[in-house]
Length: 86
Image (cartoon, rainbow, N blue to C red; front, side):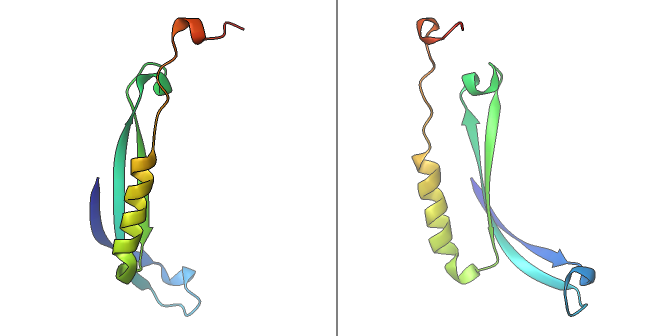
């Protein structure tokens, strides 16, 4: 997991006042390896990203994101007997 800060530019055509706006965003990104069964036997990764311009609340948001990431669980792989050959 990593966190970074970067400018996000909104083009002047997308702003009602007609002036380009630059907003500093904070980002948290986590890469979660998935069980091989989730990717048809191939390696797979889920990417979870959180972005916010609200720096004053970053600790709160980041804490919630970490709680969500820690709550992720994957089922145990099914045995051949459990699989339906329907």
